[in-house]
Image 1: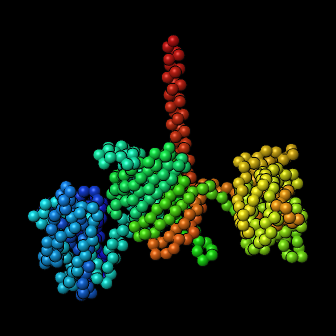
Image 2 (image 1 turned 45 degrees about the horizontal axis):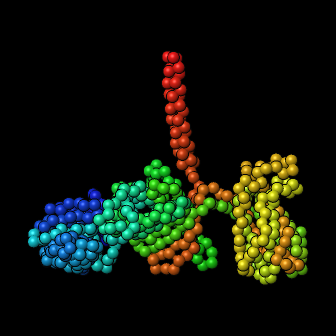
Length: 520
C-alpha cells in the first residue's frame, strides 16, 4: 500500500489522527472544529511508503467561514503541498451554516517517500475565522478510504452524553433556554457508523426527535412532554466513551441487548446484536428510531419478551379424518386445517414441558367465516384431569382468512387451586392446556388453521423494521441476550451493597436513639 488511511478529525479534542502529525499556529480547538484566525496555519505531516504507486491523490478539506454578523464571512485560504501551492486565495463559502467539502487534486510528482507536508493557511487579510472540521487524503483510485476509516474509528466511542436545554415551541428567538435533564444514549448494531438522527418515546407518552451535527458535538430537535406540551430542544456534547461492561454504571435506565433477526426472502435470518440505551431523565423508553450517517435506519418497538411453548401433541373432540383435516394440522406451519363437524369442540394440548403460558394465538382457516370460534375458554392442568380456567373470551370476530390473533392470559391466572390440587403455575406452569370452544358464528362445524402458545421469557424484546440506505425496508426483531453469570453476579453485588448500606444507616439511627433514651 502506498500510504495508510490519512486523516485529521478536529471534531474531537484531542483531534483524531491517522498517519498524521498536526502543528497549529494561530489556531485552536473549539468543540466540533478548529478555529483558524487570520494568518493562522494548520500543518499536517504524513508518511508515504511508495509514491510511485500514486499517480495522483485526492485531498478533501472540510471547512466553513464564520459570518460577520448578517454579512458573509471572508477568510481566503492557501493550500500548499511540499511548499507548492495547490490553491491560492481559495474562497470557502462564507454563509457560516454548514461545513463544505473542498476537494483538490494532488499531483503524484509532489509525493515523496517518507514525510510529506500539507499546509492550510488562512489569509492575513481574513475578516472572519476559518472553521476547519477535518482533512482527508487518499490515493485517487481509493477515494473515500480515509473518510470511511475516520467514521469507523469515531464510531468506536458510541456512548454519548449531552447537556440539554429546551424552550416552549414557537417562543420568540430571544426567549431564554431552560436547563433540561441530561441525555445519554447508545445505539449500536455493529456497523461502526455514527448516528445522524435519533427519536424515542417514553412509556408515559413523552417523545423526542433530534438530529446531530456530523461530529456529534451538538444536536437540535423537538420534545413533547407527557402532558402534551411541545418544546424546542437542543444539546451540547459533554462526554463520549466506548461501550464496555461498565456502561450500565453510567445510567439508571435499562441497557437492552438483543439477539436480532432480519426478515427477507420469506424467512428470518440471524443478524448482528443490537444494543439500545436512551436516558433522558424520564421513564424508560418504549420505542426508539434512528438513522446513521451512512443512511441506514431502523425502528424498534419494545415489548415484553415471549417464547413459543413447544407442543408435544394435541387431541380433539372431533376431526374430519376423511379429508385429512385433523388436529395435528394445528401444529404445522402450513395452510392445512383442523375441522370438527359440530358447533362446539374441544382441543387438548400437551406441552413438551410445563410452561406458564402468557398468551396464545389462533389462526383462521381458508374458508367459511361462520365456522370461526366466537366464544371459548382456555384451561390449564398439571395432570390432564383437573382443569383451571385461565382465559375466557366471548363475541370474538376474525376479519380475514388465515388471520392470526393473539390473546393474553390474564395476570395471575392459574395460580389458585385445581379442585383441591395445589396449582404451581407461578413456579413452573401447566403441562396440559385445553381450548374449549362453546360457540361459533353460526355454522354446523368449527375450524382453525393453527394454535400457538407463548410463555414469558423475561426481559423485553422488540419488533420493528430496518432499512439499509440503498435497499427497501425489511422486518427486524430481537429477543434479550441472556445475562452472563458475571453480569448477574455484578448486579447482585450492587443490590447487596445497597442493602448493606441501608442496614448500616438503620443501625446508626437505632444507636443514636438508644443513646438519647439512656440520657432521659
